[in-house]
Length: 233
Length: 166
Image (cartoon, rainbow over all chains, first blue to last red; front, side, top):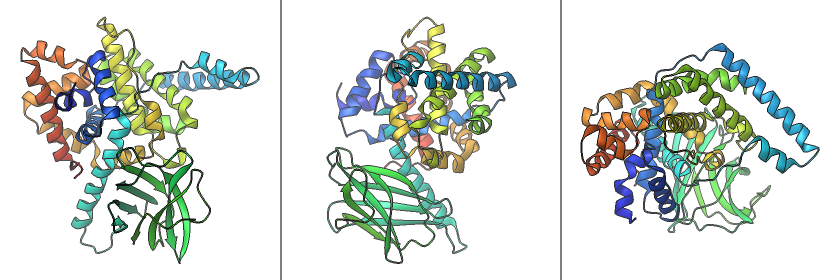
């Protein structure tokens, strides 16, 4: 299938309405082709369809049944750990194949949606005091991005593009700087296409700047390289 | 897990019931989805909050798989990317989005679509029909179904304020 055919199938794909063979073809294409960010967006919208179903209380017996299964599963896993953990797990929980693109990419695009949404909120908020801050991340070069701070929720949403994917032993580390002191708030890597997004939890009440540096994959206690991107808050 | 259940069971069961129209199967699907969630709990970073999107997606796909199996097709359940989802810290952004938008906005957006787009979307999402089956059921060309599904979603996106990335 070529890109045009994939795009035509985007709606059906997002709504999980493709026959299996076609689904696999589409996913194989999407995994290796960077041209379909719009489809990922449709996937996020399709997720919203789940909300259109009316809520309904399950019978109370279901909860009891579930909790019992969980306890049984936990007991079996604990028992299995004395023997061969991996084999045991496989017996209890069959491994499943992966389709890495589908939902992950939709989620990344949903970040863009949230940014747009929050921008809309921000401009409609006339009280002058907004808990939501959006800043542009720059380095004066080709890479760029946006950081959205939801101070009240303690969430930082970062979307970037133009960053080189790093080898496995390296990662991009995000720093929240307050009173000149950087605190590492999370790690991410960029995709082949140079895009990345991350949602990080942090205390953002007094943050003055956000910076991104390249560090070892496990992160550093303090930045050890110059920022590749940064934004004053 | 218990707290999670109390918070999400109504939504999950509502979705499964909407698709399967049968309380027993819906219970099975919800139970299975929660079990998957529990099994994956070590990979979900709980401090990042939301697992709603993962749970609801599992419920949807499992329910549709079951519906299709009932119709005598798709003996192999389709793969579901829980791994990708679990590792995406963006999962809780979906939660934020859906919480702020809310079900009313989704229903409104869906309701504002012309019937010729809404109908195939509902057939796909809630009745588990493939685009080929929708074309047959409605007696319209496959290409038309493809474009209506796509257009309907695009319109919903606009109505919900999800603008495509620049």
